[in-house]
Length: 51
Image (cartoon, rainbow, N blue to C red; front, side, top):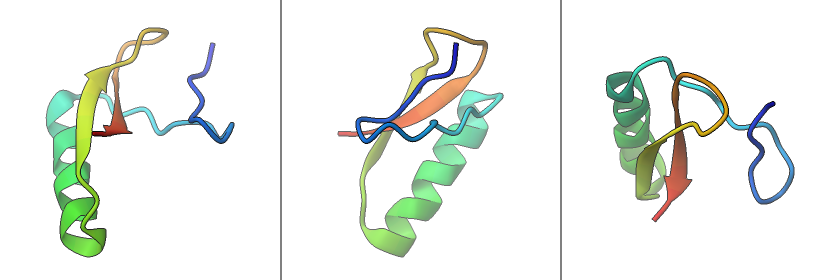
């Protein structure tokens, strides 16, 4: 089962919390969007979500 965002798009699955946090940091620097990392409930990995 794939995890989808609130608009129906598939969410990016990161294989480690570190990689997900690194991407969240980049998005914050580029766009000013603050994101949290959470464990995927359907697969082994992590997703980003808006705070």
